[in-house]
Length: 475
Image (cartoon, rainbow, N blue to C red; front, side, top):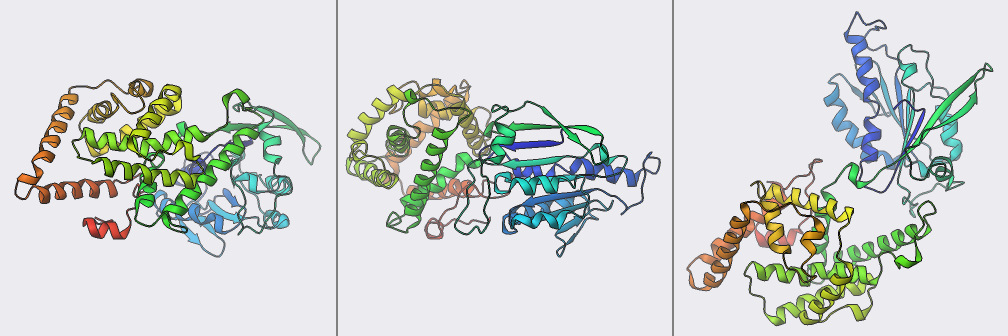
């Protein structure tokens, strides 16, 4: 983009920090080609580039994740690139510098005043003071005949980012980013022009633009896989006790709900309407819990698993305990399978409808399932099998707009019948339990090692469970 200033803002997930890190690639590539091609009209020797990118976070520890990503990527981009720990700077073969820095104290902008940068990046801009942004921005300059046409300041931020107790900095005006970039055009993607006077008295115009980012811009499978982590945490014996991993995970979710609820209600650019009720309200939370409790029991029974009434009631009660930690009213926490079924039907009649967000999450889920069952269409057929009739009613599959099931629907039905028969015969066939246990371990093993693009596993299985189930996290 040709704009002098660009702000990308939005919730976690769309990949803002990654885009920021690699935004300088255009300059890096250009400088490499200038060295490589001796017939380039603006050729310069290797190591002579005047290109210099500056990537900033408010404090040094906040840079760790970005630095780790840079250390993995930059040597692959250029085998001649080298790192200077003292200057926290990568230097590429062309001589192009990529510096990482911070501005913990209000006047730390003065550290950068003596340099000339061709690209400046502010990660989590809301954590900086406006003075820091403006003063460092004055160093965006060069006389290089090529790079002077590629200058720009690029910033990213999540409006929900807040200070923690460990932070030792303050922001003079926490609303300056919103006032400067968002208020002029809350929906974003509108280019504005501002008039500036140069030191020599001449007039110039600089453009700026705000680009809101959403999960749609960069779908992340972790948003689908992360609930698996939570289920394992809360279902471990004793971990719902105070300070247990289940207790901590649940309280964290409750805090996130409170922050989002508050943020949504205070959003001036897109006001929350009173007739919509309360965001993330009691009914919303109760319905979500039912997808982990009664809906799971229904799925197990569809596969032929035998779950006694006592076991079902105990499972429902366990999830009601999670609900109490989340702050759900006791009147919405069932104590039996029968109560849970009636509550699910009532909520389903009121709430089940098509939404863009539901379709997006469904697409992510189908992609995850498809990696485990690499037969075209199998994931969609499997989803139809479980969602044709649910505890929330018969309209769930239609609301999610699942792709039409292909021939694999017969494969799914055949596998379901096979499983049901196998479970009925399990007690009577010698060695059947042992073989079925082996199959279950293989499936769980694939789930653990199902890699995301960043090479992290989608969710963590506690060591005690891995040992009991005979699983390995690294092979």
